[in-house]
Length: 390
Image (tube, rainbow, N blue to C red; front, side, top):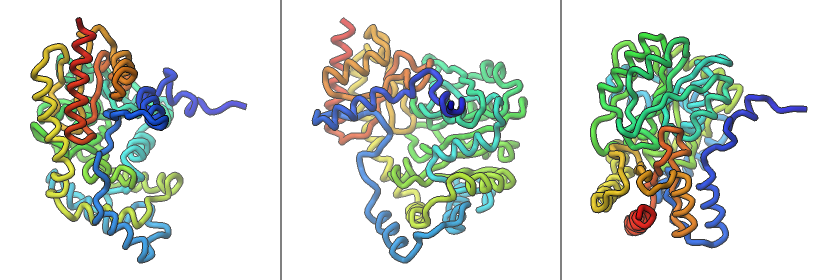
C-alpha cells in the first residue's frame, strides 16, 4: 500500500526548513542554555485578563460545539475592526473564524485552486507556504525577489508568471524579511491580479507590527475586494499563539463555501477561545501597541549594534518581529552560519535557506527574548561573524 502523493510531497525537497530550530530544541531539552532567536513566539505570555475571559467563558458553559463559521459576536467584532482599518464595508458574512492563520492559508488555497492549478507565492516565504499549497493538490510556483530590492516584488517577474495561474499569495508585513510593502507595490500587485484574473491571498497576520511606513491591505484598493482573501490571526497581535484563533476575510459567496469546508475539516474553533479573542480585540489598539512595543524597542537596539560593523548587511526591518541579515561576506551560507553559531555559542537563528532560494546566504533573527539577552546575543553574533570573515 502507498500513501497519497499529496501527503508524501508536502516537503518536496526532503526538508521543511525547521532543522536548525529542531536541533536547538533538542539541545535545550538536553539541558544546554540555548538562546532561541528562531520562531516568532513572544517572550511574554498571553495576558492574564485575556486568560481570565477564556476561563470565565469556559466555566459559564461555552465548552460545547461552537458555530462552525465562528460566533456571531467575534465575527461582528472582526468585521468592525476591518471596516475601520481599511474603509471596506465588512460584516460577519465576510468572516470565517479558523484554528489559526495556518489553517486559514490552507482553506483559502483549497477554496481557490483545483488539483494541478498553479498557485503563485513570493520567495522568500514563510516556511509553510510551499507545503500548504502542495497539500491542496495545487502546483506551488515561487517567484523570486532579491535582497538588492529589499525583497520587494517586481512587476516583470509577476507578469511573466501570472498567465494561466489561479492565485497569488503575498505577506506584508513580511516574514521573514521584515519588509512592509509600500502602497505602490500593493497597487502594482493588484494590477497584476486584475490583468491576469488572479485571486489574491493576503497574509496580514503582522499588521499590528509596523515600525516604518504604513500597512495597506490590497482588499481596500479598487476592484480588489471581490478577488482578495485576507488572512488574520490573534497570534501576533495579542500574543495568543497557542490559542489557535485566526480568520479569513473575503467575498460572502467564498466565505459561504469555506464554511462548508470547515464543516468537513475543523468543525470550528472552541467557543471559550473565541470569547477570549473577542475580549482581547475589544481592548482596542492600545493593547496591540503594548504587545508590539518590545519588538519596536529591540529593533532600535539591533540597528544601533549593527551600525557599528560593516560585515553583516541588514535588510531594513520595517515591520514584524524579525531581522534579516546577509551573512555572505563571512564566506558562509545561511545554513552553515546558523549551525556553526549554534554549535559554538548556543545561539539559535533560522537560516535564510529555510525561507527559499532568494534568502540563501542570509539568516533570520527573531527578536523574541528579553532585551539584555537579545543585545548580548546579537553582539556575540556580530563578533562571531567578524571572526569568520577574517
